[in-house]
Amino acid sequence: MHELSLAYSLIELAEDQLRALPQPVPRVERVGVRLGAFSGVAEEALQFCFDAASRGTLLEGAVLEVEQLPLRAFCPICQTEQTLPSIQSLRCPVCFSLTTVLTGGRELQLSYLEVYDEPVAEPVSEPVAE
Image (cartoon, rainbow, N blue to C red):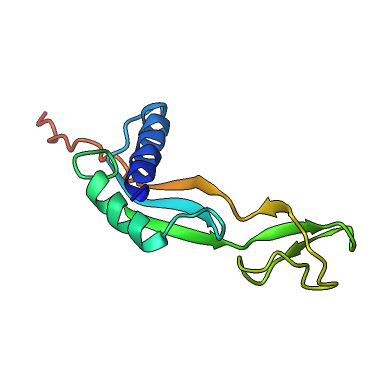
């Protein structure tokens, strides 16, 4: 199951980004990932592995949100980029010609981190008796 190594890589990338921030982040709420239809990654397996791999990290307890991206290809006949209806058919949905120039759908990208951002409360000071 290569989803476990992918989950570890996503967590490492996210933690690097969090550590580069000027102030520490108390908690990460959500992690956004863009996942292409032709990426070879099973979303359910990635979700499971992310939950397991994030234990003890800055992302523990964060929700992994996956945006599914369609398979896209350039059609040499139509001279346009088309969204393909399925990964089983690499044919243009307009002219039905075979197209092998994939332009999208293989992505696995960390797209955003949503962090818990609670304002720091000012310390309450006792009034000074005069």
